[in-house]
Amino acid sequence: MITAEIISVGTELLMGQILDTNAQYISQRLTEAGINLYFRATVGDNHDRLFHAIQTAASRADIVILTGGLGPTEDDLTKETAADVLGLDPDFVPDEESLERMLARFAQNRRIMTENNRKQVMFPKGAIILPNENGTAPGCILEKDGKAIILLPGPPREMRPMFDASVMPYLRKRGEGIFCSRVLRVYGLGESAVEDKLRPLIDTQTNPTIATYALTGETTIRVTARCQNKEEGSRLLEPTIQAIEELLGHVIYSSDGMPLEQVCANLLLQSKKTIAVAESCTGGLLASTLISVPGSSAFLMEGCVTYSNAAKMRRLGVQADTLATYGAVSKETALEMARGMRKSAGVDFALATTGIAGPDGGTAQKPIGLVYVGLAYAGGETVHEMHFVGDRNRIRELAVLEGLDMLRRHIQEIE
Image 1 (tube, helix red, strand yellow):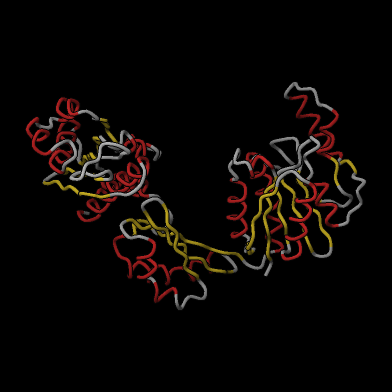
Image 2 (cartoon, rainbow, N blue to C red):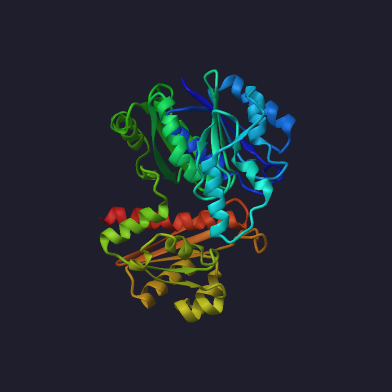
């Protein structure tokens, strides 16, 4: 099998100043090309350390892909170091097409090109040039003795188009088949519990394979098949996906990687229903999550952040006696918030959240992480009491997931 390794180059990556999204993107695309990836590394702008990293990668992989270090300055060493590893002629030659493209780009942007920029269009003899339509640093592929080193620019807006346009065709020629994957998403069951329920399938897996991953408040299941084309991949994946659905049932909210907010949006649109939200502890996060779905104006009518008791009474009609007797964080208040929101907005559904997100405000009776989520709908209402663990942001995110899942299950039950 063809194998690849990824090396991200840049001291700024090691210092945490920049998030390395390139490695994630390339990893995903390698899977699509049917190429195995076993190692990834990050190296600073140092010739000796970079030389060792490339040499090590090339000793165990067929293809080494590097991002970064192709700029005009002295610490941009990737191209020169890769050539050293392969023992190529150190006397680089200019690529005239790349030079013309660079000159035109500087002229178009009305900038003066300094002499050191010419370094970016100098390459070892025989290099396969990868044009850069979004920047000044072209990439290249260096080949020797069956090995390939692929050099790409660091900025994602330059790297990604170059990878898709020039690298993927090259990889597909070298790859043996492809990988096809489907992602199932689960809410209401942790990763360990999901894996336990899927144990009969996991213990006998061959092709496709099953892998579980934990996200904030949910679990994903990736089912991957090695195949020759997407049609064959679909045929291989479907029986395993059906078996997983039979084992897990309604906790699976998506079998194609779709996030929960998009699932809820689709259900609302298909049923031609509308929703409004009343938020306390989530502070607008629930509305924002729904609004992140394009076309949300067709189903989300309005949202209110009623953080104070006065706002809950004035805007949602929560009774003073309810707040005095049960408190703002209670199932009674959550239900009155949802009920009042639905009535005032004139919608089919209303979700309400109230809780203690921390880091202060908790008591023995009502600890940090206690959240109530209420749902009001035609003919009824329901409320869930949740005890979440985590920091303030995590508790808010979990409360949003709980509300969306309540909505999802209710609509699916009545349809």
